[in-house]
Image (tube, rainbow, N blue to C red; front, side, top):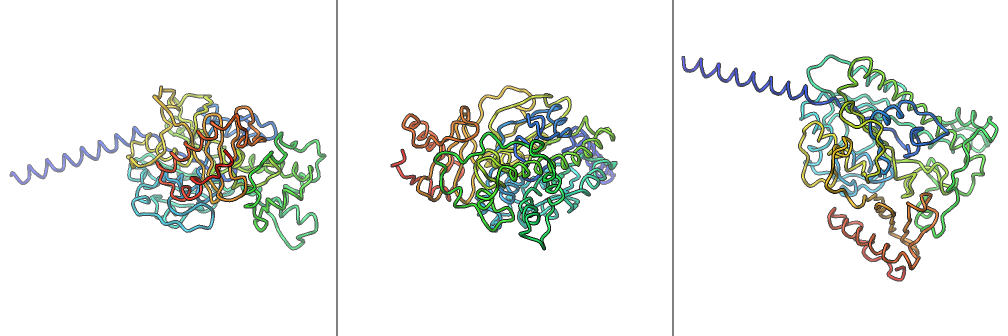
Amino acid sequence: MMRSFTCLKLAALLLFVLMASELAAADKPNILLIMTDQQHVDMMSCAGNEHLVTPALDKLAHGGIRFTNAYVTNPVCVPSRISMATGIMAGRFGVLQNGMKATMPSEVVENSLGLLLKNAGYDTFYGGKTHMCRELEPRVAGYDEYFKDSREALPAACIEFIQRERDKPFFAVASFINPHDICFAYQAYQIESGKNVNGNSRALGLYRQAAALPIDQLPPLPDNFRIPDLEPPAIEFNLKVTAVTPSKTIRKLYDEREWRIYRWIYCRLTEQVDQQIGRILESLERNGLAENTLIAFTSDHGDMDACHRLSSKGVFYENSARVPFLMCYKGTILPGKVDSHLVSSGLDLLPTLCDYVGAPVPKSLLGKSLREIAEGKPIAAWREFVVTENHTGRMLRSEQFKYCVYRDGEARESLIDLKNDPGELKNLARETEYAETLNQHRRFLHQWIESSNDVDARSFAMDVDRSEE
């Protein structure tokens, strides 16, 4: 009799736990994370860009919050995506550029974004481009399903997943490759110029459309088209002539019309991916899921888009390092808010999503949840700066200034007053009236090096030539 009573008690307790778990899951929002590749912060019509129309992204921005100062942890694909998946600077795993092999402890993988949300009770899906490292591939990093295509087939696969009947919330990642195909614009230029007659290019059709247009129907050159005064030589020295987009070659080769063709293609590719995003957003509305879905949108890095006569990414200029970051959650996140807090997309994404689902994150992470800002709640304090890294050096963005220090070169530092020089045209590092500002940002960087254990930066940032002070 006692044994039967004990079994009944255990069964009742198990039923209670299951019911409590289902109730908790019902209170959690669905999560949709949308990523594009190579989209800089101003490549949305809601950001004031008059040369393209992005209704899907505009709808997200108008329905939620648009962060205007979101910086990537590294302005190329692999390290940036590793950071978004782990909340940690990829340089800590030995990855400072594409092609470097990661050394990643198992506890980092166990606390990566997919596994954290799966363990929080979510059905998980990853669709599209990964481009990270073996340890974070979707099949081993917490995603129940993985759909590889990152182009036209991705919206339908994502929609099929999110509209299923389920007793759990979902976490879906839609990782689109475009507007990354702008990388192939130079190949198209070569083909049309007769210099690569046997080649092919994903951008060839758009290139031909743009080349047929009168020049006044192409986007104008940006206001900061010229090469800045006292540009650190490390920038051009590290540009590759062998890349699919050989930025060093293009910088010297392209005339005004070719640059404007490049910008037109970039706009059209961005509009194409916006249409694909729009299909997923429409499915949320159609299936009654929009009210209980937190949507986050960002990109892994930007594109120079002809600023400073540069194409592609990998540098610390704004168009390369600053990206869109949108969040929308109806009835919870304030609609139509434009916010200028300094955001690290790679460090802050994971803590933010985990905050909304109640998932614990390692206390050692340097990122911050954006939830209170997004919901308009008062915050006691915020960070003084964010840092972007790569194999050439470090960039530190404070409220008003951007400070960069490079590993090599005769002039290794730059200091830009972004408030008064948003186009980054004047390097103030040698101006005597900015000596204290320069030293303050050096101190900020040294503070970062110690707090983040940036051993690599310690090897070159601590010994900046004091003759430049």
